[in-house]
Picture 1 (cartoon, rainbow, N blue to C red):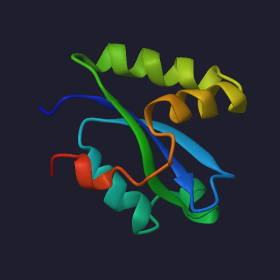
Picture 2: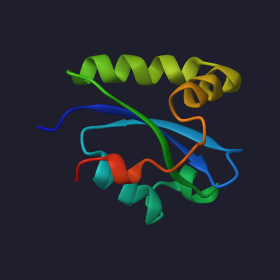
Picture 3: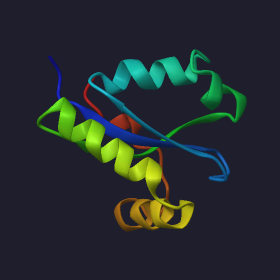
Picture 4: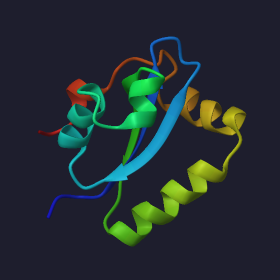
Length: 95
């Protein structure tokens, strides 16, 4: 099994963001980009701007819930600390 990862996607403008968790980030990103996830398709959210690996699925799920409970401002501050240019990080993931 692959390592669990919490990730954040954004629309091209950064107006819309999405927090998720997966054990196969490359596959899940492809699903988002192919329109297989209704919410991210509707708002054109497909740019990987943050990801955080975890040792266990329960730890990743706990972190995902934490991030989802945060205000938009707090999520943006997290992104700005790790990826201030909001560049697409999809080239940095293992397939």
